[in-house]
Image (cartoon, rainbow, N blue to C red; front, side, top):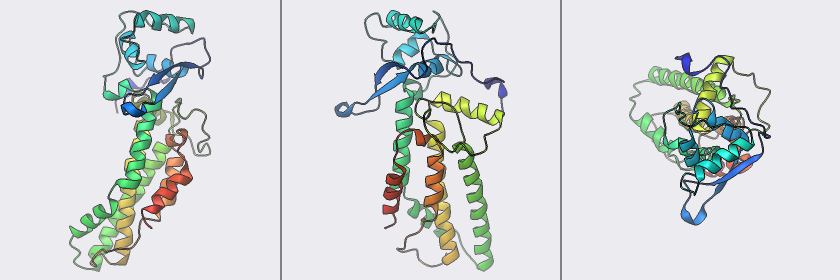
Length: 279
């Protein structure tokens, strides 16, 4: 792993005079339909993060993110507003990170996108069809072959769960989850791992880790479905029957302990919606 991009002491935030949690401005969402445009609050702390590593946005990019680029005297008014809270934005500053589509999103919208992706994974991903396909394309010659496949699935499921647990312990401070009571009893990540995850979380504005947890959780459902069918009889035609229930507790816990916990997503509602898939 290239450690050069992860400074020893972590990202150094630009210094501001204002209270980090104070509102700096509100920004209209970029991904909403015109009939339902959402507005997202941007705090002083978020502006600090955008001016600090890993992004180090310049005046032009920050103005674009905050939707001030085309307003009259937008650049000057932005500098004046930053000066009032003790944040300087030097002229001619070069950005530090590659610009992606996520660069244009504020943290609130990035986390909202992750939440919506999680909802679609839970309620629309065809994990049952994927399970059937994977088992159908594997030739089970005898009981020993079935046992070997079952061992592979168990190992894969354990590794996936370890990855979910690690990502769920990311403690990078973001506007979306700064005030959330996540699972603080979990053992903190070691400094190097947390620093690297913080880089990823900051560069994706909170979208990265929750989205990976969603994808891995979906894969976990497929693996658990496979395990249940292997325990039953992989040679039978797979018709009807509810399976995958055993993952609900693990999946809900993983999401509850992740940065999803900071976006007002009702866990009981998630559980209800997910259970409806098997009823």
